[in-house]
Length: 294
Image (cartoon, rainbow, N blue to C red; front, side):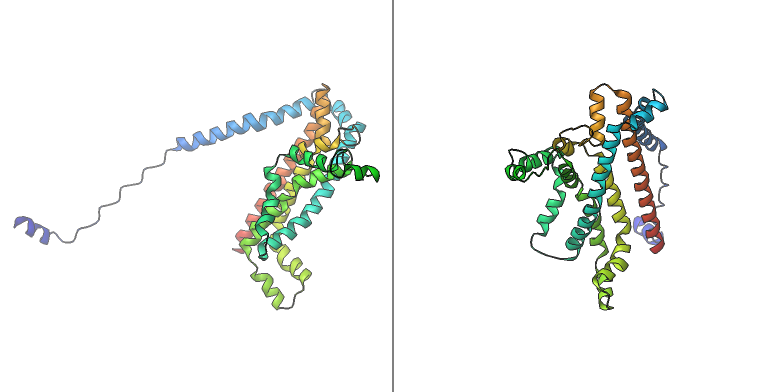
């Protein structure tokens, strides 16, 4: 009876006061940051510093002489030619493939996506061997090419084909998820208002994908300039003719010409740093534009 009266006269039960949240300890965060910085220092900053130190160890005149050597200039020129061909070709292919996959349903769509991803899963050396199998002297088309005096391997066409193979996923893979997320409502509205195909592309589609397109082009260019495995197989390592800059670095290093090797390697490192800077700028501009339009 006493307990019943107590409950009836006590009034409604109040929820217990929440316990104050415990302050998060800063040590786990500091430990993770320190571990990340230590990893970056050991595996990124120190190797980069070592490359530039070795490149400049004999002075600026030796550094410039290594870069102005005839074979080095030929290697730089060939790398730039390969990138100049691969990047525009992959830009056109990437936009077309992304548009087809994001906007249409057709038989073989999943197969096309798989083929786009193929260079990511196949070793570049295997890609080079595929071209040897196709265009080599004992390859499927080797006899026909020899009869017509057409050179693919150990010449510029083989280097261009190998570079195209290893780089063609980059633009398409950046644009496909972007175009799928954006949808096609704006393009359909442009068509209803009477816009033609090219007019719709340049005034609606391209402004919406410009930052993803630029991001893919930057990555594609970086891979084209730095490709080693596939190009090494099809080039023949002919000095001054079929050596790209990475192959030229390998030859100099194997000849124990370390100063020249590291000088050319420093040029590749500078290109990589420039690529990272452009990549960060594109990400910043894209996020800033998204925040403004949100």
